[in-house]
Image 1: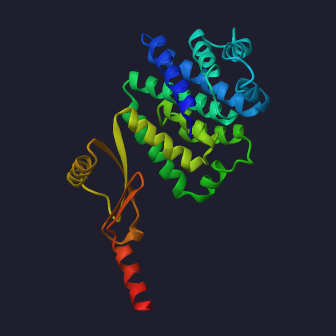
Image 2 (image 1 turned 120 degrees about the vertical axis):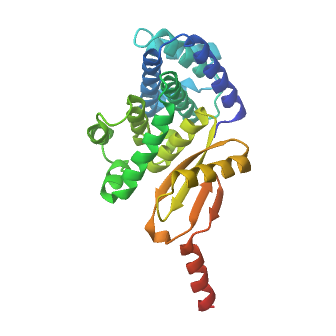
Image 3 (image 1 turned 180 degrees about the horizontal axis):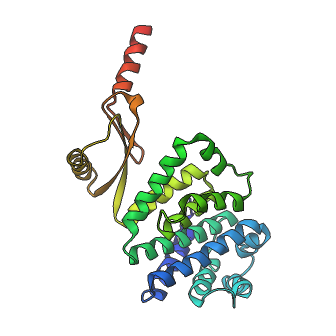
Length: 273
């Protein structure tokens, strides 16, 4: 989590990027996003550079110029300018700057998907891929193995998703593989789903049912949750016959478990006492 000064630096950089890319096409914005994310990978692999860019003994201008000297001529002006602005901010630790660069790249990628009208589809595709990975333990272990070369895991994802999802979806899955914000793969993917929903001004509700809900049931549940939370809710439904019946809903840290499985477990515990 960013300290106050870091949040201010990130907000300023995000505003600058939005202004500089206001007239950019979705494809141009996706290019800028890729460039920013490539710098996140660079910082991840170069701890000395991270420390130099967050060294409080250096002036803000010196740190900005250092990053410009590394990037100039290699990236678009929009990417270099916004990253130099970030480097000039005050950061409590080197990892905080890395997190900010990653988040800025993801935000730009989501903005490109929004500009092309694909944001809702990207959100759903990310969630469905997470479900697919969870349903295949061997695949989940392979994708979440931090000891396996990232190139090999990325190639596996590319082969699995080629021609099946939007380009932004595939790129975000790769970001999850790299450990977005220092998280594991599964947690990274979940966070990216939530950020995509937030871009649409929606709250994510994870729903588990024993049998697939009808469209009418989904709409009623979404309307009820929207009324409870005061904003539109994006339902992410997972079918798990093991719960027997009922429904479980998780929204943020709130859990509403009305499943038959929970009641059976409570009954077993009561008899055991």
